[in-house]
Image 1 (cartoon, rainbow, N blue to C red):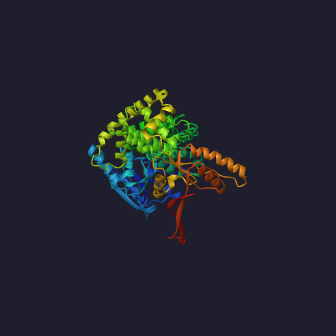
Image 2 (image 1 turned 180 degrees about the vertical axis):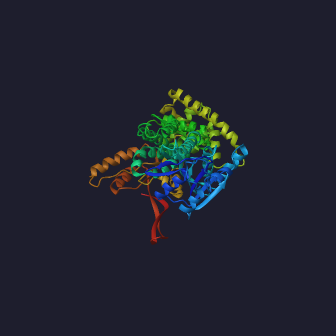
Image 3 (image 1 turned 90 degrees about the vertical axis):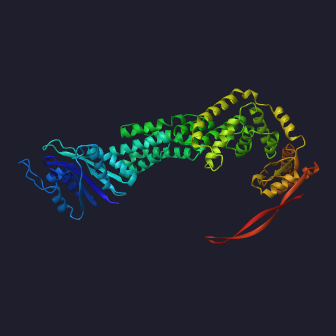
Length: 575
């Protein structure tokens, strides 16, 4: 990595002029001499100075100046100046072609590029750029940025008018940055990734002085919000996408107008226009469907198929369980009810036994939801969901199957998948009045499961989903025709009196009896346990408690040896 100054030497009959750079001023006919002198005064050091010269420029302006105007006294070329003022800096004259045809232009391109090493920091003076050289500079730098990871620090141009008028030296770096920003905006709008926008903004922000940073903080915050938005999409974080989009809009609102940075503002507006579909109040499944369409346009097929399947599940969660807040975020409803019933209905060889298997592991309230969806969707054409699920699984499992689908079919079927999903949702909306009643659901559950099913009631603060397989199996053996139903043990106030305990026991006895108990595991606060056990046994209901074996296990940590107690289920014992 080196700090490089590059310039092109022309053949012009240059006149001395006052070149201005910041507070510096230098009178010289060569802009390169003036610029390097002023930069040296500012404490800027270069590891290498490179000049590109045609044969004619080398003869006229390199070793000595061929005087063609009597009034110009100076006759020193660029080389003696560099040897005198920069004796320790490597100076490299590079021959270039005249660029009179396409072959020579390509040769010029490669000549400049070959002078650049990996991670170089480049300052380029284009004031006396020969013919197309200034235009050629931009694609060369873009090429080198990608392949050699260079940084363009400055692009200087001396604005010469005449010998009597001072010539300010301007830095055209922002126009190089605009090319980078346009490319970054293109990557976001067409390919859905804001990583380059965030990187460019971070680099730009960190290069500013403290006072300038304050004016750029809103743009920096927006760039970070855009990156979070695409991170949410690319990692399929469905619950984060709408909030991330809303945050982008909030950050954009803080960029008051285009006056500070009009060119970057227009690119930012272009970027924000590409996520306008996510604006406004939308239901969770609507956000998911917008994500599907957004990803389809940008070729993000894995994300699109994943979002599409989850959009259908989300819609069903919320439309069939409207009384449950955020039903689509409830794991049991989402995976064990909705996903299972959709998958079973869409299977090619489904049977009542398949539904019975899924129902048997659900608590009664979830059995009713499962049956409600089953009865309502049996009239639907559900095979599209099976195909959608197959493609989604093939993508997410990296195609590691003998019957894997080719990529072109996966891409081409996405449009059809979206059409099928839209039709599915519209059909359900049109038939909401046909959702079966509780009586119809109970009748169908009775037919499918039989009327004698009795359940194992877990009346404790230990959710059955955390039980070991051995404990679940033991509970199933005590209620072979039923399922495990969790009834959370309540908090009992320490100052509660006996009457309050008895009242609480009556309340929970009623709750448990409604769950058709074959057996009840009762573990919790001693007073309430005693009251409950007495009542349950009077009703002839079997009451048990869990017996565990405590084992001490030693493990080595960074702090030494640590003893950990592990409780292993052994059996249920009757009260």
